[in-house]
Amino acid sequence: MGLILFLLIGLAAGWLAGKIMQSERGLLANLGIGVAGAFIGGFLGRLLGLAATGLLGSLIVATLGAVIFLWVLSRLR
Figure 1 (cartoon, helix red, strand yellow):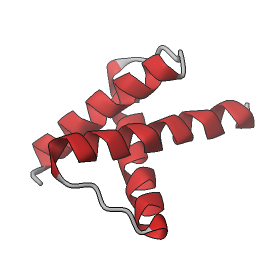
Figure 2 (cartoon, rainbow, N blue to C red):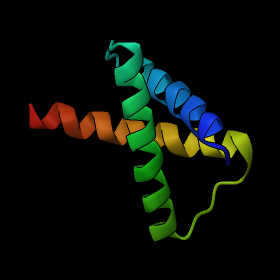
Figure 3 (tube, one colour):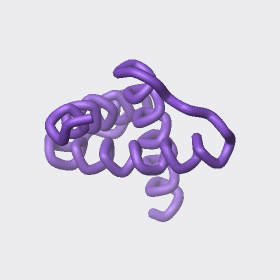
């Protein structure tokens, strides 16, 4: 996956996670949350033996990871 596609998926995942968790943040924050969510989601998916394939699978995994990331952040505050 190319870097630009990775960043676009991260941006979309961060935006979706922000909507799900009702957390309004800026464009760069959404990108960071989405990219972190992609790493978290990918890590947890491998731990559970699940694999995401394709664009939609990557977006779902990144969004779930970003939701988990935002949930943890909300608990730390």
